[in-house]
Length: 173
Image 1: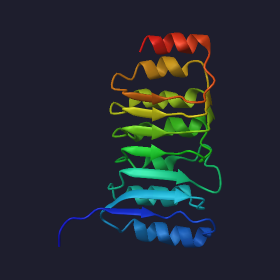
Image 2: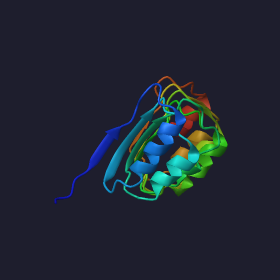
Image 3: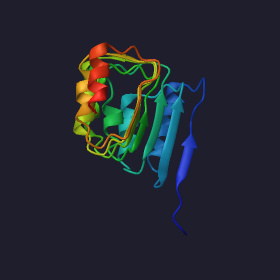
Image 4: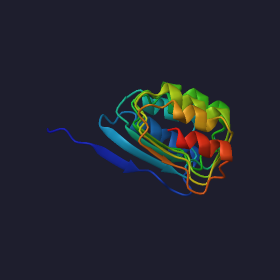
């Protein structure tokens, strides 16, 4: 049997937690799960951590029904991630900092967010090439941290309120 890659959009609007938990347990057994999209799903932190044990998930889009806040250990366990979209996940600064384990992350999407110090975790990720923070609000230090990303190729700040000092920092990129 040849190698294949599985991409699965498990986005549903009314999946109940017990069903989602069982589904996550079954997904953890899939050997070639590459891309997973979870929109409006009631998935727990432990379920996400269980998925991380396979080490094959490279792309994750997650927007759960309940905000994750600082409970991001499950995402942090997915250490093979190259793409992460957490728009609508309600992750706070403390939750973002826990994502420092995602050392293979190349693209980070966190639109319509409001964060401050949490985005500093990106500085510890050597492979980040693309960051999208569309219509987001963030602290003044964010630009200084992003400037330290030597491999950054694309930064999308469309619709973000930017202070004059941030514009000056952008000019120095």
